[in-house]
Image (tube, rainbow, N blue to C red; front, side, top):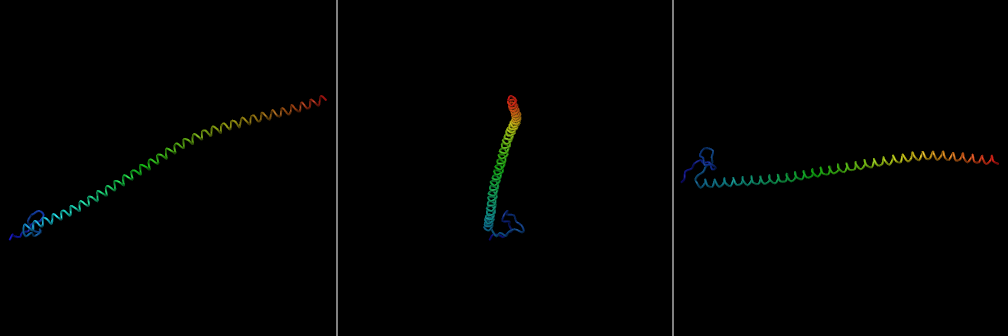
Length: 141
């Protein structure tokens, strides 16, 4: 029969510490078994790469969601800033209008006070005049 030799079933080199192969048929079987082992490793690697790719896709989708949420948050904050600025501007306009109205009211109030005093003086003069007229009538009689 074929002679027995020590041959590495992977690379075919002879030497110590390699698998014992009895003949070429056993060598073919050994190669086939190694091929199956390689296929198992390749399948595991492929599966691992698929999982990694799916995980990366999930991470990327999550990152995109986070970016979208951040963008929405920034847009909302910007909108609030704009609304706040508009409200501040309206408040300033209203305050200014209110101050002008208050000034007019104060001016009118001052004018009313002046007119009231003038009216009081006229009334007193009128009363004095009436007294003078009354006195005059008495003197005539």
